[in-house]
Image 1: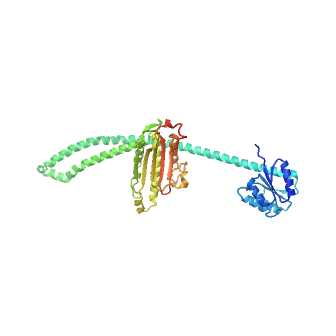
Image 2: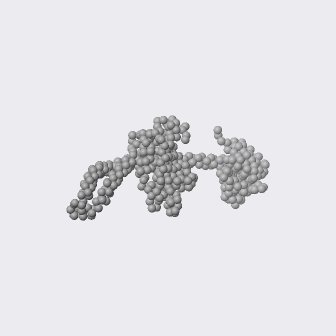
Amino acid sequence: MKHVPLILVVDDTPANLEVVAEVLSDAGYEVAIATDGERAIKQANLSQPDLILLDVMMPGIDGFETCRQLKASATTDDIPVIFMTALSDTTDKVRGFTLGAVDYITKPFQTAELLARVTTQLKLRHFSQTLEQQVEQRTTELKETLLQLQQSQMQIVQSEKLATLGQLVAGVAHEINNPVNFIHGNLTHVQGYATDLLSFVELFQRHRANAAPELQQAAADLDLDFIQDDLPKTLASMKVGTQRIYEIVRSLRNFSRSDEAGYSIVDIHEGLDSTLLILQHRLKGKPEYPEIQVIRDYGQLPLVECHAGSMNQVFMNILANAIDALEELHTHCSAQERQQHLGQITIRTTMIDDEWIQIAIADNGPGIPLDLQSRIFDPFFTTKPMGKGTGIGMSISHQIITEKHRGKLICVSSPNQGAEFMIQIPVRQQNCMGEQANHSH
């Protein structure tokens, strides 16, 4: 339905009102009238006319003051005002334009001139509004395009990161595994040789009194008693060390498991433990940061169908952010406050129901300000100083959970009360294809 423009005519002379209203009505416009400035302002706020014809000389507040008040109000400032005046003084016209008027009509007016000026201003307003709508629409389209570009960029960065990490780990694991396996395997033989040699030394010790003075002196210089006690311990610790290296390499492999084969059935706890092992060097105490305690509150979880490498990436991002938050908190604490506030990260896994699990990772750090919580999953948003964070870690994590696994990633935080991230995913991906829209936890 076509919009019929509404024109508000303001004049204290009834005869003038009648003539103008008749001309405008005959031309097909809707007309509203007001006999003074106060009524004109109220009427304009209520009816929101498309144009105002405003007499200059009126009792009470004159046309200039009425125009000033209309332009000062956010609800009426964009309504075009045409002054009607019997004056031809240039100074008054300049004053009117300065106050925001768009045109003047001098009384007595010609019907054709009145309609021409009114039509022109209505067309200008229509073009202005249409242009604003087009600009707004185009801005929205550009924002959507920018968001799509950012998401595409994130996907490319994520794919490249995982691919590069996979290649790096495969190469490093291969290079480390060979010498470690060689050392670890030979340690078994060395322990056997050491046992035989220590047995021989023990036999010598029993007959030491009958040995040549040179042998007795050499035994004293070597401190054979200490070697007999310490050598088995040293070999045992070396074996533990090589086993530790083997576990780290295995964790790296597990952390960056290739997702090329799609979904796989995995132990979520194994992924969490592998990620924690990789982050172990950051959890240990340092001169500037106390040790961060990790509490594993693992529930009984079934094996879960997921992209293992991507899921471990999410664990890494959340845990690394928690460590960053605790380190940042301790940076601004005194030594005494650091001792009183021990950093703590709690990982709790539970079944939500028969088909969904939850992994909650909470820290007792400074928390996330309320005004920033709605933005933490936005691409390229970061609260960290320049060079400390890219702002894509949590955004990628949100994408991995919601898009790759049809799950949810929720943040709950209060200032000075820490932050908790809850990952909710289905146990089986094929079970949730049609449920995602209706499933709420």
